[in-house]
Amino acid sequence: NLYTTCGYHPTRCSEFNESNENEILNQIIELYQKNSEKIVAIGEFGLDYERTQFCNIEQQKRYFEFQLKHLISLNKPLFLHNRAASQDLYNILYKYRDQITKGGVIHSFDGTLDEALLFIQLGYFIGLNGCSMKTQTNLDVIKQLPLDKILVETDAPWCGIKPSHTSHSHIKTQFTSEMVKKEKWTSGKMIKDRNEPCTIIQICEVIHSIRDNQESFEELCEKIYLNTKQLFFSDQ
Image 1: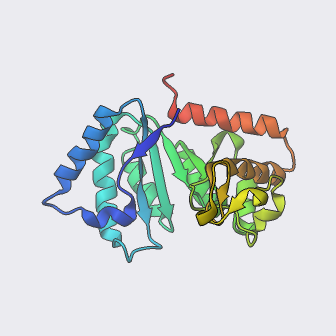
Image 2 (image 1 turned 60 degrees about the vertical axis):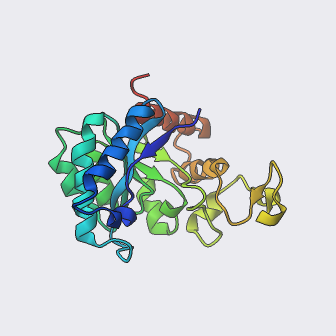
Image 3 (image 1 turned 120 degrees about the horizontal axis):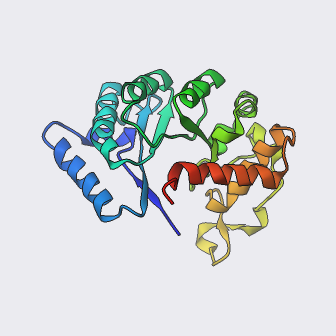
């Protein structure tokens, strides 16, 4: 089964203005109403202070909160984007903490341990992918995260683990022989330099390795799977 999320990414919030904001909101709500079983979270939305060339900070904050305020009643978890904006993101989430009943995940997390713990204390999971694992500092943060608050993702076709990433040495499963240029793609092959969902195993391998094998690889994957079910499918 395939599921999805629905919301306005912070770098696209420049499309909002006072004259169309309610129209866009109603379109989002209509999508949820027509696809309630397939849309399992609100988002990806949040704040991105690293790419303000697409949308300025004040506009991002305004329309993140606009979406949050009007979509909370859908009673879905939040799929949250955060780039260099942890305090502002936290402040807005804290403001609505009593209305947010399903929690959420800080997707593609690459912040500090203090930032992660701030969100965890507010009830959120931490989502990890290749962009979360570029440096030794990133890995040191991940090592200290509680396993019951970790989710894994690929963010394909982006955010793969590259040879230049510190985490690359922790990978066991390689897909190099399966990769071809897009012009030569055939069924069963991967396109070179494009991340794919199957590389999710590499994210788990890195986490398992840097946790010094505190549990078996199978136990780690099972726990993260249960975390995923808890967040997105708690009603099933």
